[in-house]
Amino acid sequence: MITLQPHIKCKKSDVARYAIIPGDPARVRLIAKHFDNPKEIGFNREFLTITGEYKGVRITATSTGIGCPSAAIAVEELANIGVDTFIRVGTCGALQKGIQAGDLIIPFAAVRAEGTTKEYIPPEFPAVATPEIYQALIQSAKKLNFRYFIGINRTHDAFYEHINNFVKWGEIYKDDRMKSWNYPLVSSEMECSVVFLLPMLRGLRSGCILAVNTPEALQEVVKDPNMIYKLDESTSAKSGIGEAVKTALEAIVMLA
Image (cartoon, rainbow, N blue to C red; front, side, top):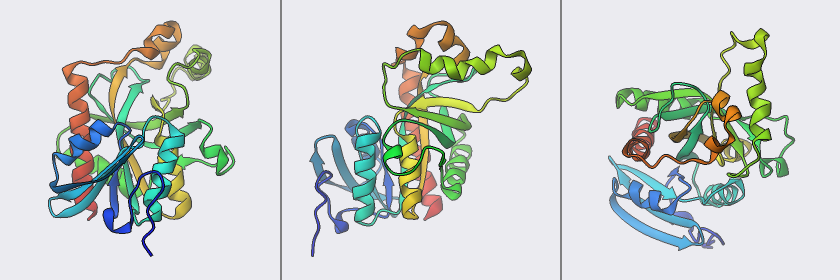
């Protein structure tokens, strides 16, 4: 029996075991430019799927849209039809000084400051990357000589959120007792936690690589709330997306 998934409009034979999942459908087409024999499978709502081969490895690219609710749908439906390894390629805001537009972030965990994953499991449960996927992304970035940072990402629900959400994270910088801490919150975006958590609950694998398009330190964001809404559209920021894609593709080749 052939089961067509209701939102992504794909069936088991359409997808590979490895999936790269950006938010933006345009990034699926960017990924597909690296494929041999790319085939567009379906495009429904925000979910565009193209499957092809990269260095002999069959890979699927599916867009998830913006935010955890639609990302959860994509992950669930891809898992239903045979995907067992998910790598999110997306953009993020940086929350540490010294991180620039176009730099890469490879998070090993995500703060679950969103509502979707709480529908699955209590908020105390962590959202973490699968170790071998995380390590493959790091090795790939090193091999390609790309500049990257690691740490904990913050996943949230509202791009235009209130500054008070950031203030509570910035308070650590105002306490003299904590000035020597290496606070590991490096980035903020809207999908990583669900990409980490749902495959984990299914016994599958996942990781994320993000390109910085809002490079502002958390301390500065707390001082100037307007910073959190600015997207960098420079050449450097755009090139970071390409580097993130290449890193994910080479990581999959290593895994295969």
